[in-house]
Image 1 (cartoon, one colour):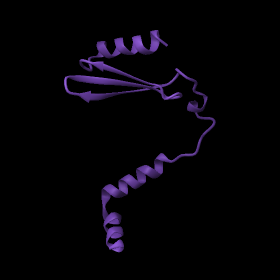
Image 2: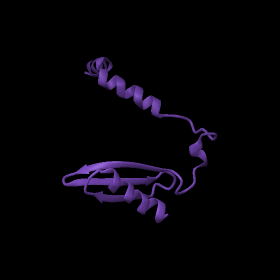
Image 3: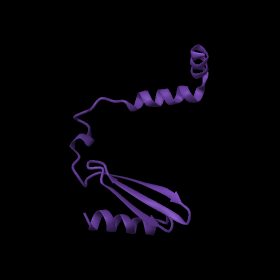
Image 4: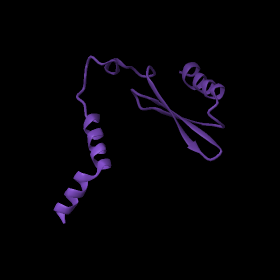
Length: 92
């Protein structure tokens, strides 16, 4: 059974692609990289999480991992910019 599982996994293109991706995600710390000099409230990761009837704007401080969640009625540019300006630029 072990050999069957191994042969199936080795022949699966999805498993092979996932393995390659996982290997590339592992990287050594680079002290010269711009992220090594980051301080709190300098770099943010921003993404959307779709829910029924709207969107959740997810904002993460990449240094402290502080997370801000805001519900938006849509992804319209004006709404998103207003929320980012209020929650990141003016409050922080």
